[in-house]
Amino acid sequence: MEGSSLSVRKGAWTEKEDTLLKECIEKYGEGKWHKVPSRAGKNNSDFKKNKQMRKVDLILNKMMRLKSAGLNRCRKSCRLRWTNYLNPNIKRGAFAADEVDLIIRLHNLLGNRWSLIAGRLPGRTANDVKNYFNTHLVKKKVASSSDPNPHLNPPTPSFRVIKPRPLILSKNSFPVILGEDKKINTTTATTLASNNISVSANSDNNISYCFPDENNEVMWWDNLMMNEKEVDYLQDSMNNFNPSVLEDWHINEELECSTTCNLDEEDNYGNLDELYLDGELWNVFNQ
DNA sequence: AAATTATACAACCGCCGCATT
DNA sequence: CAATGCGGCGGTTGTATAATT
Image (cartoon, rainbow, N blue to C red; front, side, top):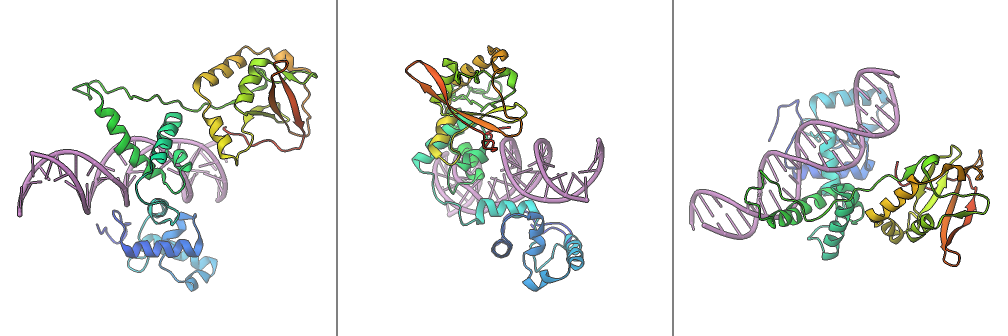
């Protein structure tokens, strides 16, 4: 699949190209993919030239694509080859049963967001996950359909995709914060506490959900597993919220503040037992 | 054994959001 | 503010290999 001298190579990568790319990544690190084709296949001294010379190099490389000595590949091809194949962190071999289980669960939650799904499977790439799903999981579902003409009447998937919903709300649609008694209503507290969801607000009165510990895998998972019913419940609470209850709650105009809600089973109220003005807004989950 | 079909997965394409110019 | 370039993503295709006829 050799193209003309001015076009970039396509198709399968050769060993030589792989070597050039690996050496380039080892030398310069990942990223800056637009620079990779010109960097790969050159020795260090070439890149100690002055800025102007490097610019000339780049132009020349664009024209010549380093015909024989360098890597005649576009930036996207380089990135793809590295992220999907050459990266030493990639795990090879068949998917384990627990990995498959996780893929199915995450796909139910996230839909075809392969990069997100792969992000929870160490060593697996989005392409791997996508390929695996399409070849091993989708076909099984389709094959189970009894419809003789799937083109006219496509089979209904046996799984339901629940897409995550953004949970950032304006002050006037948010039900949680009450007045000086530092209490929140029962239903909201129950939902929040059972999902370990925290609430945060900045000085513009924009209130957001966040997860309590972004480094805690179990927490992350628990919160993601919040099902559609629970989300509906929460949204419903928000829709029925009376904004007047917010009036007594003062947001420090200088500092950002955040709260953590825990359900108190004794009086069935969610006590606002943590409130800190540390100037640091909790990491917002979604925008 | 040869031809055909199915499968697996590497790679490409077009689009998008974001940052920079 | 528009244009441009970049990194990244998901859908789709291409192709080598395996399985079947």
